[in-house]
Amino acid sequence: MTQASATSNLPAPARFAVFDGDLNAEWAALYAGARALAIDTEAMGLIHGRDRLCLVQICDDHDNVCCIRLHLGQSEAPRLKALLENSAIEKVFHFARFDVAALAENLGITVDPIFCTKIGSRLARTYSPRHGLKEVVQELVGIELDKQAQSSDWGRVEDLSDAQLAYAAGDVRYLLPARDRLEAMLRREGRWDLAVRCFGCVPVMADLDRNRFHLLFEHSTGGNR
Image (cartoon, rainbow, N blue to C red; front, side, top):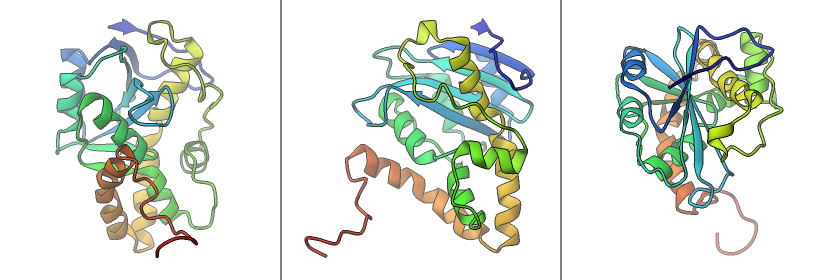
């Protein structure tokens, strides 16, 4: 484990650590007591099976943040798997469809249960066309995220820059308060039950993406109907 202090315009997290390959026993136990965990991933690209998973970020509701560096050819992370498959802990993502597919494809992890802030935003914030993480967090939490490191070489896991680590940490630190505000909005507008059903569909959509059926439900104006 590496104790880290990522450079960022955001306030420093309560705790921040970087792990190689998997969580250690202390942090696995720390997270195992959480009601919910914010999760994000970084990969070499967006195509499952071609672009490998490089980094997994986690944050709990006490602002304990970690980044797990995954190495070339790594196919398992037992403590991470146990945590993300723990049905008593809700896993909160922004655009869960990608992360859930990446975790399954690269580490054999079946994430459950799931809350997706992008789905929640699209159902709750119908007054806005902007549902990216930066816009959602800025409106609901009042924090402006720095996205400059979004497109970068995450494969150099042993030598990630302070800017990359700060970006990675920032992406999970404000997901849980955004999630809670979205739930309140969804319940107020009578859309909570619909959102829960949508979250339950995420693993199916992730599997379709992994098997190259990502356009299965897209409307086509040509060919068979």
